[in-house]
Image (cartoon, rainbow, N blue to C red; front, side, top):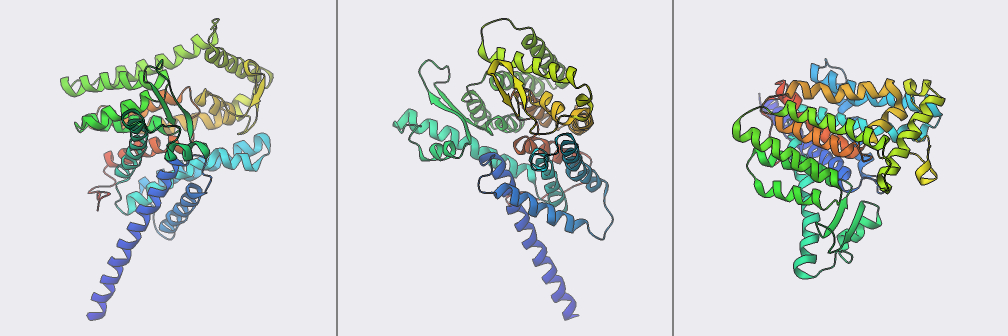
Length: 396
């Protein structure tokens, strides 16, 4: 009897330690996705690999649940499929791995569901760190004269290539432009903050999107906030109208860019990219089906140069992986949205749809950063399916 009691205590203690280890591992993955998108230290890739190995260990020699099978499909088979498609298209295995490996991040959901880890809280915590760093650096400059160009945090992020923009000028509407590559993820905090009536974080996330210096994030934030606030106040489901408007915006923006004849350099570049897509598909129609492969350059006339990726990120995904990879990717995004539609999880759909809207004209469709949004979507999808009940909080 004493032996049995001792064994049970040892088992519980080991499980608790493993859970804490996995929380740290998941945090490292998500932290790397937000602050080290280029992964110069290898923290992100190492954490993903370790998470994958531990997840596989969980699955060995036992029956799979339905949610685990679904995660295996989207987190193992799908990225493997993209890897094969890309390699067969251009024969470059290194680019094939680089273009597909981020999908393996979905395996951290296996650890999250099995060990009752609230991955949503970890995601929100990491994104709030991004928001805090951005606003703190701007506040130190504005109130205390500590120049953003001399700020050691921003200088470090700039040196390792994690800042898309850092500048300030009185002519800018926001005065500052501090754009960390993961800044668009602030929209995820925005919608949850509205739902929970934490207006400080809603305003803070809006400021971070304003500091990107880009029109699309600000427009998306304003549109999303308008619809979701009305929905919360009037208790009317406006999500369908919002999604339709976002789709119309994306299609309209493509058409406007395709027929643009003005002098805006950005619009002329976008038009040139669309023309390059049309040219490539007309010269090689089969590439529309099988893709050109990740890393295959495309000539952009407006820039007089070959580029391996473009701003039209979802169209670029179809160019690289074709219909064979593009349609499953769309299905992976649409499936949880359909399940969560018009439920208490509407905030998640607002968040992810707005993120997609921002990513539509930025190279953010299929990256480790975008995986943060997709993982949040699927985590709530599994909660809605009652697969993971009584989830323990991150603070535990």
